[in-house]
Amino acid sequence: MSDTATAAKTEAKRRSKFLVVVDDTQESRVALRYATRRARNIRCGVVLLRVVEPVDFQQWAGVAEIMRSEAHEAAEGLLQTLAEQVNKESGLMPELVIREGMVREEVLALIDADPDIRMLVLAAAPGGQGPGPLVTALAGQMAGDLSFPITVVPGSLTDEQIDRLT
Image (cartoon, rainbow, N blue to C red; front, top):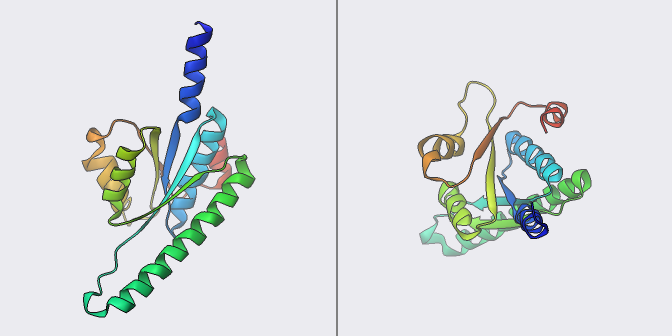
């Protein structure tokens, strides 16, 4: 392989990113740890997406705006906490994205907007409650329409199990 081809391959890998959709569930922390470890090992980036679902209080516009503002503040706080954790554990500084809307649509919109996203990492909810609506939609119904892989990790994995996998 020529020096130019090697440099191009290295640059492409450097630009590649894993997307993790984060929320308040334990399984999203599992997906984040998995993505962070893999990204560190193959030298690519991590994008953390927090989607704030819209508030529908049309007759109470002031209340809706307060609720929206509080949801965005909570999302920012969550992303900052997770970014510190990612940086501490891996040395990576993830990109932080907050979007407002329905989770599935915002995930797809971000994927369309950022061509460097090369993989979506999700974790299935543990127990008998099913894998979760996002996993069901994206890894099931829509998987054939995406242009990159989706990794679904079991939401019950321990840190040690994730470390052995990556």
